[in-house]
Length: 79
Image (cartoon, rainbow, N blue to C red; front, side):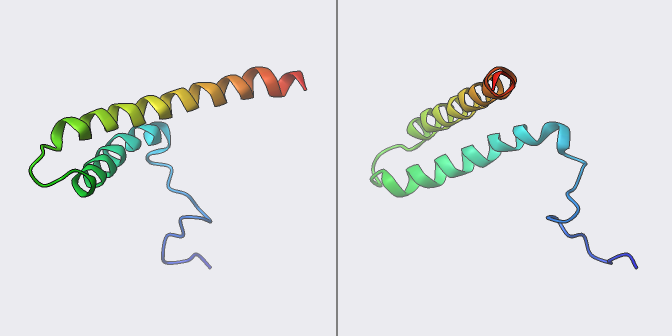
């Protein structure tokens, strides 16, 4: 018997599998905007600090992806 509802942890959605990393961009933008809106005083502009935080977070995600890729491709096979 097939379940009527989609169960994400049992059967993941394959539609966004090839571009799932691109979904981190709007997520990081939203988190940066919300964080800076809460932390910066009311009289200050939060657009520029939010953009800087977004770029820093995205560069961190890219660096982490490169390090993990190198680890999987070079270190683990050598063990």
